[in-house]
Length: 414
Ligand code: SF4
Image 1: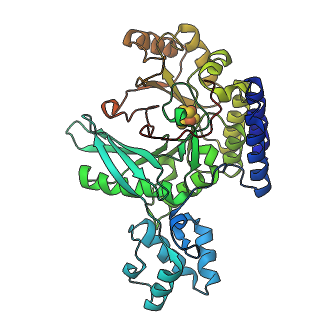
Image 2: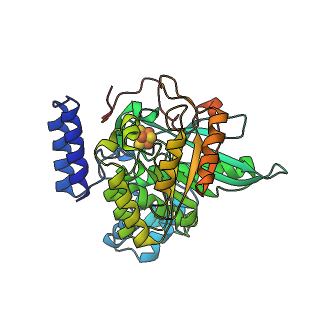
Image 3: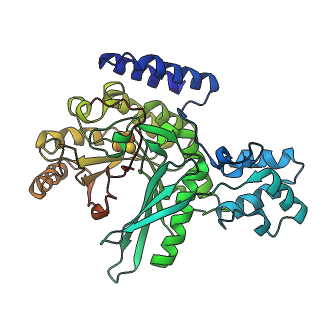
């Protein structure tokens, strides 16, 4: 059971940190989830149904299989589920009366019994470098951010258009460099809420850059594998030919290193790419900036990565934010080189966008150069990723809803 290890880890962590008062609450939460067999769903996504008559089913909260069940239970032919799916996710239609290939009687019936709870961007901010940050307001009033990151050809046309999506409102893992982590976890997003970010941004991408999105990274607000089923379901919807039809190879899901969920990805042969948010190459340093490491350390991560590669034969990517005089020494480069050999991999060295209130700072250019030289000397495949959208707080680690945001659950030490 996935929950077992994580809940135990949390409990040990909370006791170790002198916060025993939180232990019963966290333990109870995990017990309930274990009983419900919803291993990765600590807080249920609220949906548009929260504000509407209880008998209406929000079709955007259903998986593809559940949508088929919904139709079968109403005596509808299988292809009706396909038609509904296509209207919702490919044509972005929410009014059943506009679904013109459905019989009028069915449209009337669906209007009475169901709804399509779509989310829309409440605002957009555009960076000088072309990056666009979107604020989405959810049906229950919570907000999440997502980002469109364009890469351009020499002639100025868009080459690659990457969407960075959020999977949770806030995050429980409390990494010290991350603005989202400071919010705590408020709730999970549903598959529909994740897909909607992509669908809406795809429309803006077509309007702004003349072509739809080409890549998706689950690296926005939240720890994707902590909302496992909604994330994998949303990725499946995005790849469906009756939706956006994106290749799974163009989707990357990141994790701080939730080992059981990494193994689950492997067991289920999930076809998208895996990225590990590493950010430090020793337990000593990782413990300081990523609380999860004290319970799921580098040895546990190594075992999970090797299991993943053995089962899927896919490489992994390590994301490594370079912090000035913290993880940018020659010794760090040596350790990182050793980690890169756990399984076929590549490393993205990311130049951090400084976050207000965080002591860690972006590494200086001369230290970056020396670090990259040290990696090259050890034959490591590494690329530098430059910050994008930092003038609108859209960079790695910067996404957060600050204004009046309530504090959610966290394992962070303050
Ligand atoms: S880096 Fe990721 S896992 Fe860590 S607090 Fe931020 S969103 Fe959560």
